[in-house]
Length: 214
Image (cartoon, one colour):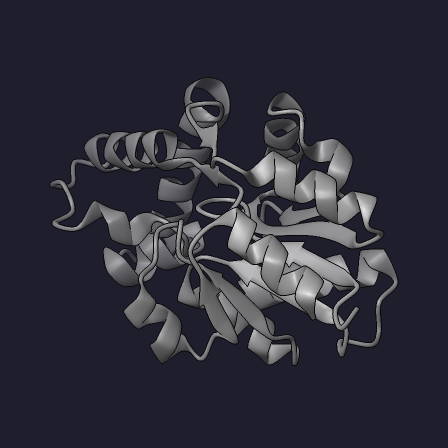
């Protein structure tokens, strides 16, 4: 096999978390007295800090408060307002049965990611579930590096990232890891091409075929 370690994004790759995520952003903007954002789908994928600071133009202190409000709403009400994409569990089961090391790298807080994946009964497939921490590890490249450390992987030549947004591609690229772009998520074929993804696949089954044929 060309790749023996597969690192998956969570939101938009393993699960459709749009209802819960968008509800939390709407709630946060309302609590801060801000108007609705013109394109809320831009919030799907990037780290919270990026969304609040870059997309909304909030300063450091306001961004911290926005993240706090969002996470409080998310963990108490919206964390399970989601569903796995069709074919995800079958894909993970087959990959695990064929000896691949599987991990998750998400910009969700790590403990939230663990709770989420256990709730949807797919945590068992992963050797490690990596996420952001409350303060420092927020960028995708930082999370992927954290995952690699926990897996004890120093050689990136047989590692493949699988994600649905350009921050997955670019975060992996910083560490010299190629990224397979999941078109069933929140991105687009245009973004996949512009971001420099290895290639794009339309379904989890196509993802499985691509990996196992290498």
